Amino acid sequence: MKIFVVENNFSDTLQNITEPVFSMRPETSLLRNSQNFFYPEFTKNIVCGVSAFVRLSRTGRCIYRKFANRYYDEIGAGIYFTAVDILDKLQAENKPSDIARCFDFSLPVSPETVSANEINYSDMDIQLVINGKISQKYNTSQLPFDIDGIISYISQYVSFKIGDIILIGSPPAAAKIEIGYRLQAYINSRKMLDFEIE
Image (cartoon, rainbow, N blue to C red; front, side, top):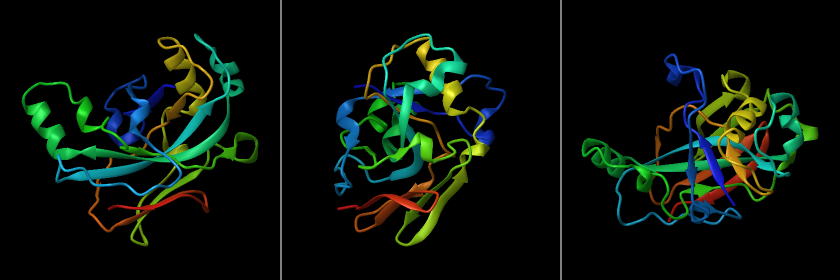
């Protein structure tokens, strides 16, 4: 199983970038079934953001955009964590920064998904709520790269298998989390994720 995360899919971050920039995460980064997240000892500064994801339902490579909607039928929500102190240190030392984002359980994903046939995926409200207050909210119509374009682009470089996940991107993560916080993620008005930080 492969996990792809689009890193630059918001207008404020584009800066003349005309193609999606994506990274890959290990399967061990997934946190499933709305389980609580245990704050790791190696960091003291974690921020988070929320993104919709699609789960691939067919194998494929070099997919034409016009056929991309045939390759997924489920949409869910994911919250991604970044260890900012680790990231800053690695970047200052010109070292790869993967461990700041790819650590175990750094990517909670919703246990349930919405059928792609039941929702307009180009016009979804995505929302992150922390301790009962809206921390991040945007509409997928604001994203410069849509799901079909992302699928087509990534497939030129990496083959898809059934069950692969693509997080389509979000505004920059800026919400800091602490032990005791409760996080919830919504697509439109439907609650997709609900867990606590321990």
